[in-house]
Image (cartoon, rainbow, N blue to C red; front, side, top):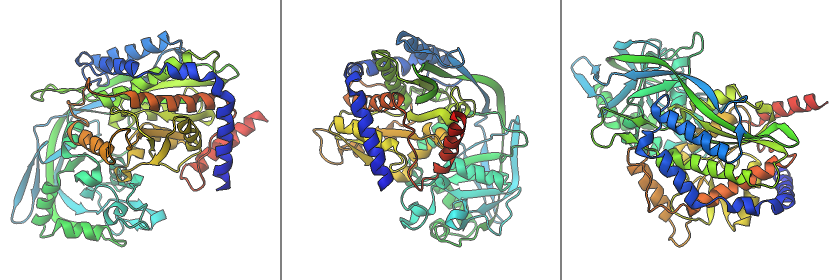
Length: 551
């Protein structure tokens, strides 16, 4: 408690010291400018902004031109673009998953019943009569005394996995983190763990509540071209990764003489034992493979006193492109996700350009590629930073901005993580607003945006989203709007710009993040992770390295 109080006082003094320089710059962040950027980036001309496409070229050139116009300098070692090598794998959708039992054979169709792909650089992959094993949540977490793979060997077998984690399923606050998803509940972890266990295949059972999105998001996001960073030498991945609809999974489990609901109940209890299903899975498909280059866009305002230290603003420019085999509207414009975040970042860059003098520290603007494919551009930057991560003060991430008007609050994803919240709280108080924890922690948003790539390296990261308490609207209205967006537009072609949007809320949130970043960049502060946070030890190592350099 003492630590947080001191941090809040320090943040307050810093804001007071720099307040005089802010108003003209803050005032330049306007809803109409954000709207104009979104209209361009989410237009059909940009084709859904897929990595390594003509849409990428148009997108990164637009971002570069805007940053240059605002007085920002090239930030990638004298260039605007940081090359990110990617492997592009497109699976042939003409495939069927077959599950065989002694007395029956089940067939599941691509997109409607299941989605499969591979992260192996192989022109053909197949599972043939691969034994199925239900491994519950597929988690190995010693700190929670949990091991779903205990006592079972899944080498060469296909694991069937529940999404999210046991805390969500039971709502038990003493199990994992209760309703809030941990990284163990994230699909990326489940495939990673299946790989560590040597599984030949890994299939996650989809369910809208614990996944955080409907099946259409799965079928839209994981079909067509998939991108990955080049694998490390000897890196193992299952031959086939994918998802099953819950109804498909229910049929599979029933063919083994079991009940999915009862299996789910058992899997949420400590001591659960993986269950071989006495079934085999077969699937085969061809892949088109290409090695391509995509790009992060990096601009920088060099610090006037300590240019080797930096505050980063990040937003991903990519979305899912155009899918030629899809009937009807086949352009995934990605207006909210994340043309809106890039637009806000560009307006923040413009505001920095209007300051009377540059901040003491550098301010870096990072527009990342391939966030939708697993934070790939942010991961690449974190592994190849322009400013060493030990001297990176913070990452302030912008993703899916508020398009429905001003709110009394601002949502902090991963609330209670770091002292960056003290800085944000001071800025929010100037707007007569309050900070609010994520109202939907079960959806795991903390692990689904670019800031997480920085957090994993110990860099304090702040990710905010729209509040839920909207001016001139009844309680619950904001969550209803978000639910409708997730259900009807998230990762779908209908995520398009709408003239009915009220971007005053996006502008207000962008002003908050401008003030936090400007004050941090003009200070000597190094915000810390709060006591007990999983990333605190990593940051303390960076602090030791900085102290060693200064001695």
